[in-house]
Image (cartoon, rainbow, N blue to C red; front, top):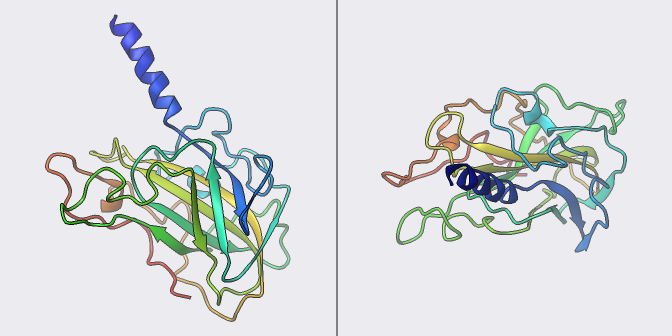
Length: 232
């Protein structure tokens, strides 16, 4: 009976996992997975990344890219998961500009090249923080989106989405990060200078407060890990 219970628990846990594999562009959903999103290592298993010092924190990449989506600065870019985002926690978006001389399909985005474009983090209500939709706006959604800053310079970018699952984050190393990178060309941009720039891995430390969550007692505040959102 204990063995059967363990199997059922593992099956339930696997079903609760997800991967971000499609984009929504101007309200249109890409027809197939991995069209503009680089295929991730969880393309079959849906597992997350738990070691924030791993190179997998960059794009969790399994294959080099092929397609590149086009979106105008000031428009909304969405990422679609293959299942609902059934783990509570923040969802954040980062962007890294591809050098003009580099090939977007193979560029690795190593070093301090990433800036935070948006963060969907905790919202404290009249009852404080909870572990459900009242606190976490992205919880139980199948798609998450943000607006490309209007003043971001035109050009090709890797756009990184991450969902930080906190359901097992009572201790260091318990947070799970579900992430992927899309290849996007931004048009109609401005002359902003995005920053601060950070690296993956490197932007997060395993003991960052934003990678920990207390149930008992329930946490009274939450600050997502990483730099401030660029106010472009």
